[in-house]
Length: 98
Image (cartoon, rainbow, N blue to C red; front, side, top):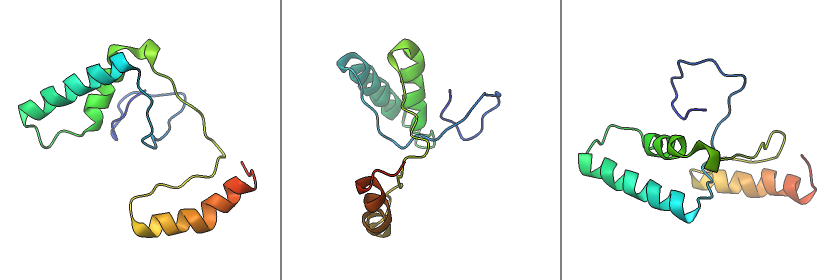
């Protein structure tokens, strides 16, 4: 598992993170400390995913995922994305399409 866009290791499968995480209080504290340390280094060019990666690799047994293959979803970055989600994705979810 890795978050980098350039992966130098072969994997059996790859996926994309949709940005939803559920952290235990201990992992959330660890993430906060790592983020504060990263900010203190003032490394503005470092990808934010690196802090997530470090936190997960520090306690890999405490991290899991859900396979959403076939589940309707949309990345929402802009107002147009919200409209598309309302018009195209929510109706699919309401009908239980997977």
